[in-house]
Picture (spheres, one colour):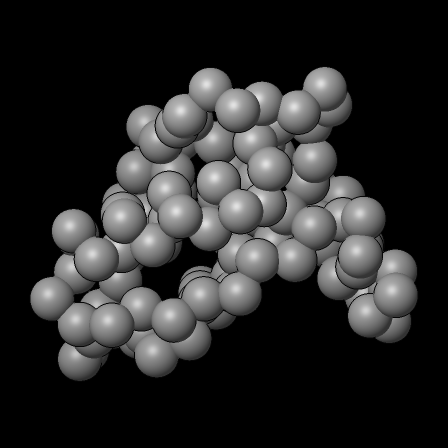
Length: 103
Protein backbone atom coordinates (compact mmCIF):
# COMPACT_ATOMS: atom_id res chain seq x y z
CA UNK A 1 0.00 0.00 0.00
CA UNK A 2 1.16 3.58 -0.51
CA UNK A 3 2.67 5.35 2.45
CA UNK A 4 -0.05 7.95 3.11
CA UNK A 5 -0.76 6.61 6.58
CA UNK A 6 -2.94 8.28 9.14
CA UNK A 7 -2.00 8.53 12.79
CA UNK A 8 -4.18 5.69 14.01
CA UNK A 9 -5.51 2.40 12.75
CA UNK A 10 -9.16 2.08 11.76
CA UNK A 11 -11.34 -1.03 11.47
CA UNK A 12 -13.18 -1.43 8.15
CA UNK A 13 -15.90 -3.66 6.75
CA UNK A 14 -15.45 -4.66 3.09
CA UNK A 15 -18.78 -5.69 1.58
CA UNK A 16 -18.47 -7.41 -1.80
CA UNK A 17 -21.27 -7.44 -4.38
CA UNK A 18 -21.65 -9.48 -7.55
CA UNK A 19 -19.47 -12.35 -6.39
CA UNK A 20 -20.18 -15.93 -5.51
CA UNK A 21 -18.28 -18.00 -3.00
CA UNK A 22 -18.90 -21.00 -5.26
CA UNK A 23 -19.87 -21.22 -8.93
CA UNK A 24 -19.89 -18.35 -11.44
CA UNK A 25 -17.90 -15.25 -10.42
CA UNK A 26 -16.23 -17.28 -7.71
CA UNK A 27 -14.06 -15.55 -5.16
CA UNK A 28 -12.29 -17.72 -2.60
CA UNK A 29 -12.51 -16.09 0.82
CA UNK A 30 -9.30 -17.80 1.93
CA UNK A 31 -7.41 -16.45 -1.08
CA UNK A 32 -8.95 -13.00 -0.68
CA UNK A 33 -7.99 -12.86 3.01
CA UNK A 34 -4.41 -13.85 2.16
CA UNK A 35 -4.24 -11.31 -0.69
CA UNK A 36 -5.54 -8.51 1.54
CA UNK A 37 -2.83 -9.29 4.08
CA UNK A 38 -0.23 -9.17 1.30
CA UNK A 39 -1.62 -5.74 0.35
CA UNK A 40 -0.79 -4.58 3.88
CA UNK A 41 -4.17 -4.84 5.61
CA UNK A 42 -4.09 -6.28 9.14
CA UNK A 43 -6.38 -8.49 11.23
CA UNK A 44 -8.25 -9.66 8.13
CA UNK A 45 -11.25 -11.86 8.90
CA UNK A 46 -14.26 -12.96 6.90
CA UNK A 47 -17.79 -13.18 8.20
CA UNK A 48 -18.88 -16.74 7.45
CA UNK A 49 -18.74 -17.32 3.68
CA UNK A 50 -20.76 -14.19 2.91
CA UNK A 51 -18.33 -12.09 0.89
CA UNK A 52 -17.99 -9.70 3.83
CA UNK A 53 -14.54 -9.13 5.28
CA UNK A 54 -13.15 -6.97 8.05
CA UNK A 55 -9.66 -5.52 8.38
CA UNK A 56 -7.53 -2.83 10.03
CA UNK A 57 -5.60 -0.16 8.16
CA UNK A 58 -3.80 3.11 8.83
CA UNK A 59 -4.48 4.25 5.26
CA UNK A 60 -7.12 6.86 4.43
CA UNK A 61 -10.32 5.38 3.02
CA UNK A 62 -9.65 6.86 -0.43
CA UNK A 63 -6.27 5.09 -0.62
CA UNK A 64 -7.89 1.83 0.50
CA UNK A 65 -10.58 2.21 -2.17
CA UNK A 66 -7.98 2.75 -4.93
CA UNK A 67 -5.84 -0.15 -3.69
CA UNK A 68 -8.82 -2.52 -3.68
CA UNK A 69 -10.05 -1.30 -7.08
CA UNK A 70 -6.63 -1.99 -8.65
CA UNK A 71 -6.47 -5.38 -6.93
CA UNK A 72 -9.91 -6.53 -8.07
CA UNK A 73 -9.37 -5.25 -11.63
CA UNK A 74 -6.02 -7.07 -11.90
CA UNK A 75 -7.10 -10.29 -10.19
CA UNK A 76 -10.57 -11.14 -11.51
CA UNK A 77 -11.94 -11.28 -15.06
CA UNK A 78 -15.35 -10.05 -13.90
CA UNK A 79 -16.38 -6.86 -12.12
CA UNK A 80 -16.25 -6.91 -8.34
CA UNK A 81 -18.32 -4.15 -6.77
CA UNK A 82 -17.62 -3.31 -3.16
CA UNK A 83 -18.43 -0.94 -0.33
CA UNK A 84 -16.06 0.04 2.48
CA UNK A 85 -17.53 1.07 5.84
CA UNK A 86 -15.27 2.39 8.58
CA UNK A 87 -15.94 1.72 12.25
CA UNK A 88 -16.16 5.50 12.65
CA UNK A 89 -19.40 5.66 10.62
CA UNK A 90 -20.86 2.25 11.51
CA UNK A 91 -22.77 3.50 14.59
CA UNK A 92 -24.59 6.03 12.41
CA UNK A 93 -25.73 3.16 10.19
CA UNK A 94 -27.45 1.18 12.92
CA UNK A 95 -24.76 -0.27 15.13
CA UNK A 96 -25.03 -3.91 14.06
CA UNK A 97 -21.98 -3.55 11.82
CA UNK A 98 -20.03 -2.23 14.81
CA UNK A 99 -20.29 -5.56 16.61
CA UNK A 100 -18.88 -7.42 13.59
CA UNK A 101 -16.23 -4.84 12.80
CA UNK A 102 -14.98 -4.88 16.38
CA UNK A 103 -13.56 -8.33 15.64
